[in-house]
Length: 339
Image 1 (tube, rainbow, N blue to C red):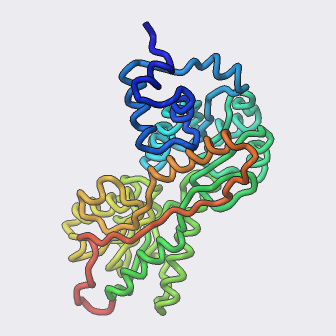
Image 2 (spheres, rainbow, N blue to C red):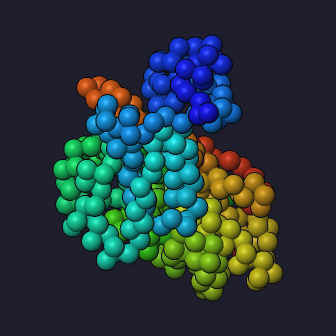
Image 3 (cartoon, rainbow, N blue to C red):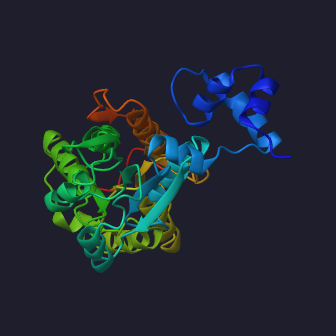
């Protein structure tokens, strides 16, 4: 026989309403009790009746998620964390991969999510027209990318502060030839490369270091792109003694390029990344750590909270903490003439 909500409640020692709130992700249940309920429900094979819940609430119990790249580490990590929160609350995810201009234009022209989802989590940055289209859906909206946006709850980090800490670290070590591997060819309307580049330029100016355009290269936010960019920087007439990569994946590509040129970090070139990728510690990469998975989970929780408390004032912007993590890829420059 299929287990009922009363069976779960009796096994845990709580009321059926508490079980319902816990499995729907609603407030009023402690994390300890929520975890115990989820474990018992899974053990007994209990699942809430989707059709009954939908008829009672008018909801679809589906969340739309828009992504520019499913296969990129950042987006995949955010998506996985958000999906876990949605799933635990009894919601399905309807995923739209909008990586090409054609699919993106088709999506915002037709808006296939209309009347099919209860909320939308956007991992791409919509322009003004696209933002207006999403607001017209009349559902809660959230994102983990870009700055504040009317009608959206934004969960993110301060890209400028993170970049400033990375580049200042290199300046304080004594580096004067500081290159940057950017992601200028990232997703459409992507503001992160711009914010991080501006912060990089500001720190150089603050330190009295003249900007050299030859010390910038596009790494496409991939390992392969980072390797190509580092190879380009090493070919400059005066190569950098240190490099800030706007993502850890590009930084890892830069480290691979150094190895192929029989150079070492930090002996020959110091390298700093951004993200604290799960492999950053493995390769000893100094980096700016941002809580990527936590951003996805928090955005998901805030969307569910807005569904359960529609009259509450939604937060416009939630800023997550970041920190510089010092590892083995940065050190003072070796004496070899002007730096």
